[in-house]
Length: 404
Image (cartoon, rainbow, N blue to C red):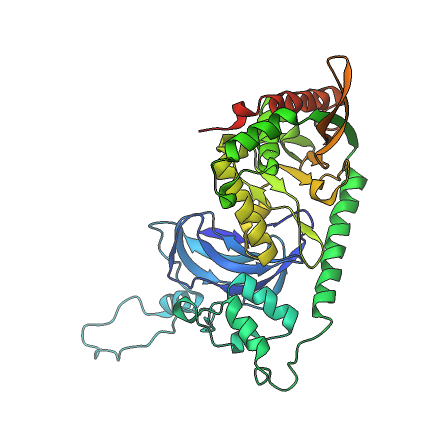
């Protein structure tokens, strides 16, 4: 029997609300399949299963709020038989061992069926539609869906909001719904960051990096590409960080149970500001191994889905490092707070022209300030400095980061 528990979808998550099931008892499921939608304080998240098997029993109903680690469902492993229910077991124990040959044939007994959690027939609702419905104060289950198999889409919610007769008495949109959700998000972020500053001995380093070579190379790469396919400097910075982390593995992983646990892969948590306020840091997986063009497409998709409230649990639960880029806000540098149980956070300010000594002369060059916040329990300043030097050198040879 396999236990499926509510995963932690970030350091700032202690509990979640089950919004809907995408499966029912008896369904076969595959590793990586989305089986439920869970609402955190930040977004509705598609939760994936991490085992192959057959769904046996649903233990939490939609609408219930439960702590992280709560058993949500049980699964049977491939080939495993379902256990006999308590009613059938009791009936078997009370049945006579044998029936005399002369005794009349007994009437057929109807044994009670194994009890199962009732399965709701409510239509599926996309995470972005459910999040928008919450803001507007609309009950998504009352909206007629136009998506696949009657599912409710974001467009359906917007149409319902525009219709004057959509809301039943007492269900008008609450003007405070968005404010309440923002308050909950700030509380969750505050709890996680307070824990980080309380428990993690941070150290901070900074390095100014010339970007002339990188920007010239990007311009050359992009000149024949359509605007929608151009590679931005953000993707190049992500790739450079990931490759540098492979060479300084003490900064990539988790600090758990009193010891550092390195990660072989670099899953970069990208800090994304949400339109309503607050932020999330979902992961781009295996960043060091991906070509820049693919990484750019995945980054654009991740930002779009994060702001639409359509993230997957794997993207929220397994970042091995966080990268924040506030260059678009014009700040020179950013010194972040580590997301536990990670052990490092890399920050970038704006790429901007500044005075720089080159060949004994002061010239104006595009520069960026890269910063590192790291956990002193997993590394020290010497290793952190080597990471920043590695990062600087990689960005002087951007062609080595292109991939295939």
